[in-house]
Amino acid sequence: MAIHPDTRWYRQVDGRQRRAFIATFLGWTLDAFDFSVLTFILVDIRNSFTVDAALAGALGTVTLFFRLAGGLGAGMMADRWGRKLPLMLSILWFSLFAFLSGFSTSYAMLFACRALFGIGMGGVWAAGMPLTLEHWPTRLRGLASGLLQGGWFWGYMLAALVFSTVHPLFDAVPDPFGASAGSTLGWRVLFWVGGVPALLVLWIRTGVAESPVWLERQRYLKTRGREELADRVSLLRLLQPDLLWATVQSSLLMSAFMFSYYSISFWYPTFLLGAGVEPLRYLVGFNAGAILGIALWGRASESALGRRGAVSLAALLGAALAPVFLSASGPGQLLAGAVLMGATGGGIWGMAPAYLTERFPTAVRGVGPGLAYHVGAAAGSATPFVLGQLQDGGMTTGGAMSACIVAGGLLVAAVVWLGPETRGRRFEAVDEAEAAETA
Image (cartoon, rainbow, N blue to C red; front, side, top):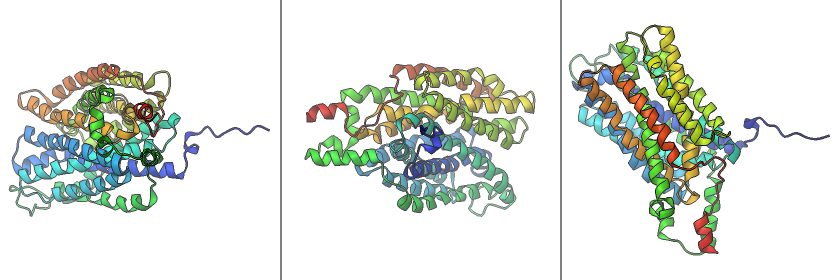
């Protein structure tokens, strides 16, 4: 009697692979929570420190910009010393500065805390994604990519839930830390909650195994008997001719991704409040749509669509749906728009971890994707500020968002085709250039 293997994907991964996934997923989810909290309290911060919309948006800009330093640092550490250590250090770092943000007594102090928070935020992605994807089977990498990136949207929903339940409890409590008259404690408490993710490090340290692909590479380096400078400083490897275009194209693509996403999400709670509706319902709809969409698009990218086809189709659908997303004609249409935009404009992210890790060899799989992702974050960091400037210049919040959403979707759909298709690439400890040199 023939024995048929279990075709359910979750039966095809073992305990070590699941734990690696959980570590990165939770780290990324809690990272997203700590960043997304800011988008709900922009009005409170403006009132507390008497700043305009552009300066409030700049808090998001500086965080995203400093992610580049974290992505570079943690990426090089991940290539040199393994994926686990920089993941743990990054979680501790962003938890600390999320917590300290709640004690800010001036806009300048809060600005500095959010900049330093961005360093840890960048490190989680750069170290965590290769840790998980190097554990998982090649045939399931697209799905794992979508599920992992979905942690960002779970974090956003968690931030929305905590804002809706915790913030009102402290919204009438006077602020004791020297902010302007009439300011309240609610926004500070939300930052203090951001210190909780540090506890995750205790479990990662003992419960998660190092990447088997990285370990295999370390064995190869030992047998080679010599160590090049690029083995110690993996960033240098990215500057060599065979990887230079991969670095440039991936960075441009992530810049387009970030511009698209922050056009959709950063001022969305403010848009909803301006439309006279309670944001929670629609934010849950958007993020639930995104969670489903990125998993489905990630899975679809394993089909004939490939990574590039899935990205471009999702991006174009998102751009087309901008009028529905920003319609204030009724709650039903507004909710439908939120879910559809999450599943399309947000769904592009389902392919990001897989595509970036597949573009780079094991020797630079920390710093390569980390650099590209966070160059994108640095470039995209201007988006919240630009949208604030457009509003200060007379555009409505919805009008500014709509123009940038359409531009972002078109840009994503074009730039992804400047690089090769990567679906099905295997992760090897030794890349072709090294193998040829050794031979």
